[in-house]
Length: 136
Image 1 (cartoon, rainbow, N blue to C red):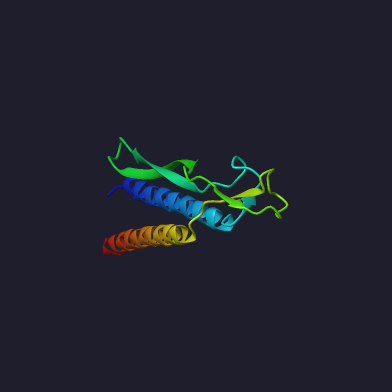
Image 2: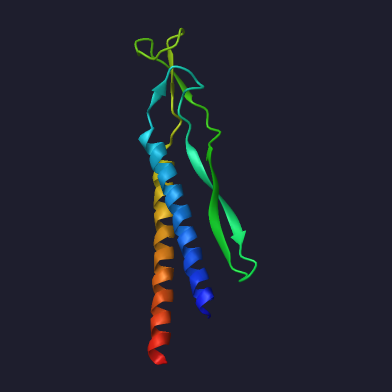
């Protein structure tokens, strides 16, 4: 493996780690906004998700990933009748963020697991390079 190949490997791992961190931050934002209410359906918080896109390096033939966007989910806010709430509309309704905290925790755990896998892959590559250098 050439030096540029090693650099490419580390760049690929770094891109994957960055993508997983964005995924984790989106889920954390969703949890932070869980239970939040608004005075209208339009103003209510909607969960967000990172959208991954594959990138192919033509020179090396190696593939990596990046986040192409962070998109709002299609989940509709939950209307709740609460006439005493200060944000209640003229019908006495408030709109609650449609966040499933369990789903968000699974998302965080999966992204953390993928992040850890990438860290381990980088450590293995580093160890192999060190062993190669020592054997010369």
